[in-house]
Every structure is written in C-alpha cells, then in structure tokens.
Image: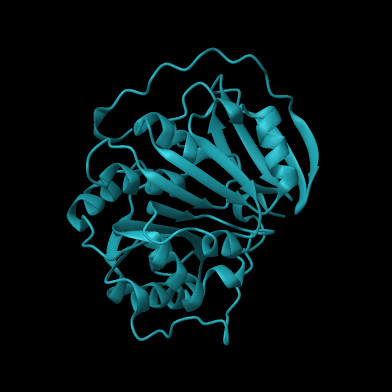
Length: 291
C-alpha cells in the first residue's frame, strides 16, 4: 500500500459470499473463494478473470494492472487527501474499495453497464459497506456526458465487454468529454489490453495525447515490446505527471514494469475517432483464464 498508510479498521462482515455461478448481462459470472486469503474472492465473467477483492483487506490488490492503477492513485497529490472519483466500469469495485481506505473521505461514482453484475456484487461482495460510494447502472459514455465540467479529480476507465474494450470509449470525442469533466489538475487512467504490434494501444495513447498535455504508459517490458498480450495502463492529465515517482513505483513492483512517455509509446499513430473506430483486440486463448 502506498506511502505507509494504514487502512481504517472495517467492521466484521455480516454476510459471507456464496461461491457459485450467477447469470449476468454479459455472460455467466462465477465467484471463487481464494483459500490462501480469508477474505479473498475472484470474480470471473464468461470465463475471464474480471476482478479480485479481499473483503478483509481492501488495500490488497491482487491483479498486476490494478496494482499499477493503485500506484498512480498513491502518487497523486496531496498525499492521502480525499478525491472526487468517477469510475467507468466497476466489476467488483476493487479500486473504489482501495481508494475508500487509502484516501478516506473520497466521494466515488461507479458507472457499470451490467446491472446483473452490480446486483451480484452488491449482494455477495459487501458493496454496501464501502463509504461514500454510489453505483449507477448505465452506458459509460452517456454517464460521462451527464457529469458537470471540472467535477472530478480522477477518472478511471476499466470497462470490458466479453474481454474487449468497447470502441466508443476509446475515441477522440469521448476523451474530449473526459477532459471536460476533469479538473485542471485531474488525472485520467485507462486500463487497456493489447499485444503484437500494439496497434490499438498506440492509437489509443495517440488519442489521449491529442487531448491531454501529459501522457504516460505503464506496462511490463514484455508487453511494451509486443512479445505477449497483456494489460497496459495509460495515464493522462492536463497537468504534469509525477513521472519519476511513477517510474520508481513501477520498477519496484513484484512484477516490475516500465513507465514511458506517451509520445515515445505512440510514435506516429493516428488518434481514434467516432468516424474511424478500431476495435480492441480479441485476447488469445488462455489469456486471463479465457478458453
């Protein structure tokens, strides 16, 4: 956990999740207990590992890419201060839980397209215990359009449908609207996935660069070189990013990553637009438990 902060003690859970299969909008969800951690639960949708939460220790981030997003959150000034956060895509609300304990007093809104998944997480994974968190079922792009200008310190996009990012959430028009909602020193964080020639990822980062003055990319070296399919975390802001601090945090991770400037990563790639969208690539078989 960042900067040595200690999470507040949470009340003992009154409800124990029930492992099993549950129908949701985008397939079948499964809750799987982690026998190595008393409060650990894995959520999959359509056979794809979607979220991991530790109900007894919300500051524990199991997935590597979520830990990188957590590092970004930890590096945002002022240290430990509450944030106004908008999440596009919620899953099991791993990151909102993390922010609630590492930055107490934060106000957070999650917009999640899968209403069945929201019901499952609310009933089985103790969602009501997260302070100052609201969850709204709806389209992410419409949700951003409904927000007031200069109203968010942090916007996180982590939205996948059947293991692919919806293309309307990657275009110049959408990113421009995200910029409208962010405050002048706000931060936009995007989880994306790609491999091979990284065509989609480079174009998405080029899209961020067309709107924001400062962009960075964090990923494992093998993913950055296109040697394997995996997650990349893109960070964008109107204000300068703490590049040196982000690079140190990435390099010190259990699975070390690199932090590279957006212009170095995107090169001459063209931004994505509503008129010429490019679909997020299909993950190869075996990725994230996908068969």
